[in-house]
Image 1: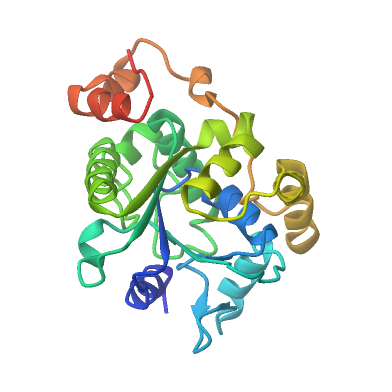
Image 2: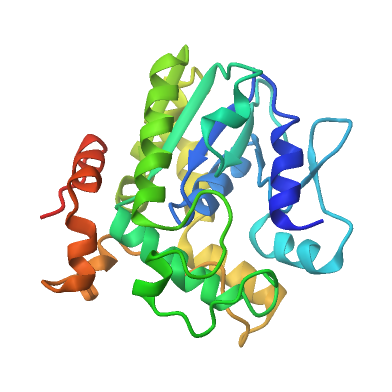
Length: 274
């Protein structure tokens, strides 16, 4: 079973009580998921988890995907009142049968999300993601859709369509929240406390602080290196805020991000592109 097939299968198991975390690739789901697990909630990565009859995520049967899962998924212990959070890259049309009651939209500056996605896919295409062929694809070619990457399309239009659709879905949901990657990195305890309270969940200050500390880049990178080895490509990268400043300028590449529909959608989420 490929990762996309597993994602589609798991999406069919989502129930109305689940919290759907709509996150474009490379928007910080690994970080958010680790904090939630540390707090005792269930966080399903639909690409690598197998949801069992107990409703909990389990390691998949194939060794390659199981190894990938072990690099990013630490142990967790459910607590009273815990919720099941479902990471999702699919559009809302895949969930019309269940009318999700709670939607969390995890967002990141599109310049960083798209560039980070490119780096991730290049790093793992030769091994885990064998259905991709982007070893020699440049970033501009990647933005043009060269190399199949599944749902959602890793393009400027794909970013726009995904977020517009989920903003509309969040407006229809009884309860919703928007979490910005940048706040998770710079003010993680505040961002998590606000999210938990919005969802009506316990937000004990000490518990949140401890979960955030155990989910730092240093802690998660150290755990991954212990599993994968020092020289393996890392899933957990530095993920700094405003990394786009390292390559964004005034040229044909950056002009791709100044198109009106992207500028308008990014502004709705608090990002200024000029």
